[in-house]
Length: 289
Image (cartoon, rainbow, N blue to C red):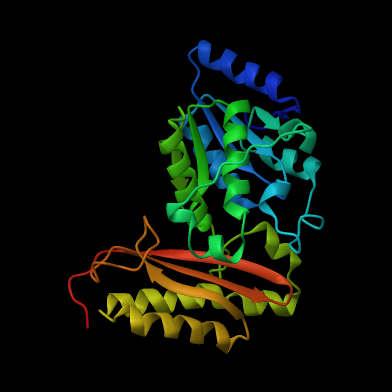
């Protein structure tokens, strides 16, 4: 119940036993995979799970295999106590917080490689990233065999990769993607926002402004060839280095075949040493200029 301290489990087999026992009792179990450093976006996923499930498990595991050699694995924020306090307020029953060695035992030699939606954007810029994501999510699903797992739409490409893996491997778990939670100025909540200085935080709103510009132009019937440069201009206006700004098919992430959509606008940029991503869904439209 809300307010109770979650039970912390670190052993994958013990965690699996708890989940299976609950399901044998007829209890519906929801699962929220995270890397910790939790914020209101994670809390919204836990709350959504609690609304439709009898029990909720949240994993807190900073996964080393999805970080590149020059990325922020070592400095990624970690605060298990604060995370558990937040989760207690949202009715979470279990926190699965394994050690790296429990998820990747000595001698492990298997990785899951996903093509298709993993090919472009983050897949191009971060070689090996989605193999690390797919592998850890699969391992987490083994340790936490819930009825349904909840993911945030901010990591749109990741949700497509997870859906593809679950479908292709026939994993018996549902995937529910929930809306992105934003600050009042539109910036998507992210654990990496903590890296931003006050001045950088003001510049970071450029990602949301870029997506708002994409939405406006899309609704006006403008072409992708017009929208994408306008997105990059919005980033440059606040001195945000653009990794990509694209309007693509929302399922394949390939270039649009039908210019009427639907579509997804994707953006990734760097502010100082911090890299942020965001997206916005664009509905079908009747005219194209």
